[in-house]
Image 1: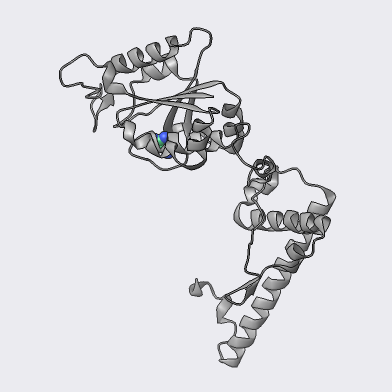
Image 2: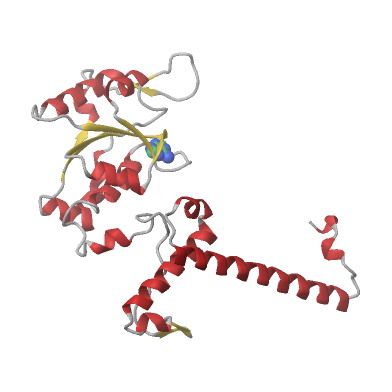
Length: 274
Ligand code: ADE
């Protein structure tokens, strides 16, 4: 895959030389080319921004340098057309599905906006995708590009040592991943679950699936609603629901007992305790 990144801070993208993404580049699986947007300015101050029409705070990135940069980059390979990605908090929420989709593309171009964003006519002309990495506002698109590119790069063929590990990832099957352990067997008094040491691969797979379901239910119930569930999965979820009910009944029984021992009657149920 080829990935071009256009930014006014090329050094922001240097972490792409490290670790897994760096190795993917060394092996030739990924070819990242970072470009300084100011190379496509024509004034002495190398200006890339201007005041927003309609007023308001901040500055907007001017269209001309962006158009010149994107035209030159796109024309650098006349045999194909890149998919142009603009990271922005106003974009489509990034997800593992989205990363899988981008990983199938031969060529991506990332446009890193700064200030209040890029003139909308550039987006209308060039962008295939506007992507948000979360409901918060960063100072620019560089960090979002790092996030997206890393999520995409690890899905490229041969990038992960063990190709099974991408399939086991959190989200790849719509659930969060089960907890993981390594040596020592006992650490700070906590023991690694016995089933993981049993050598029984089917039992390990069942345990991991049940843990993934429990975790997802506790942390991201929205994901459970959309996951594909087997009968065995549904049995796990019913067992969890029964445990929760049992726990609630025990907790409220203990609270009542404590209240009555302290002579408080049923004050715990009174609205003014909220
Ligand atoms: N640029 C600024 N904030 C961003 C966000 N949350 N996602 C993607 N790009 C951004």
